[in-house]
Image 1 (cartoon, rainbow, N blue to C red):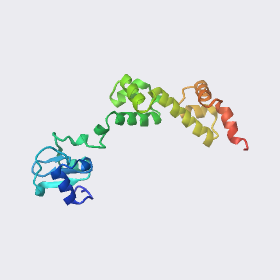
Image 2 (image 1 turned 120 degrees about the vertical axis):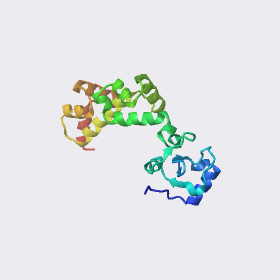
Image 3 (image 1 turned 90 degrees about the vertical axis):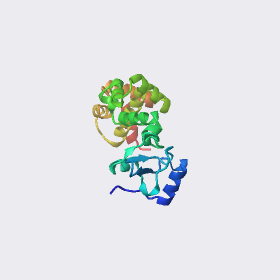
Image 4 (image 1 turned 120 degrees about the horizontal axis):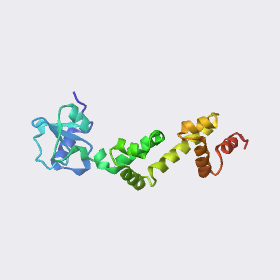
Length: 194
């Protein structure tokens, strides 16, 4: 049996029949006679209560054998990836970049992985994050390197490689640009008594 919602079924029924927008995205209703599930705001004439089952998520409704309504489009319910729009793609790009996606391949490969073009990826990140993919990756590398410098005694070449830098020279240059001192100087400060 599919998991059902913890909300009171009477409350769900009232929200469904009144098309109450406050409940949109909080539950979905499956209609046994049609095999379709809907959002509470669906414009279709409400089905009889005896034919309706409530679900906490669209996935639960699908597991129970229901198909999404073509009118109210459950995939566009509040808090769904479609509802969040381009922010979802930007968030996924950020997760991939933090995971080192741009350390192993370029922006073109990342954009292809997300199903968009590199220029669109650049526009999305500039809009939602305020920086280009390359700038985000550079910051992530420097932050990884700083943590490694603070938490380990690894040699600089190993720190640079683990942080995602292609060369020790690039690591030193970027680190000095961001922190105003070399990685070695910063590490020496860590061991200096205060």
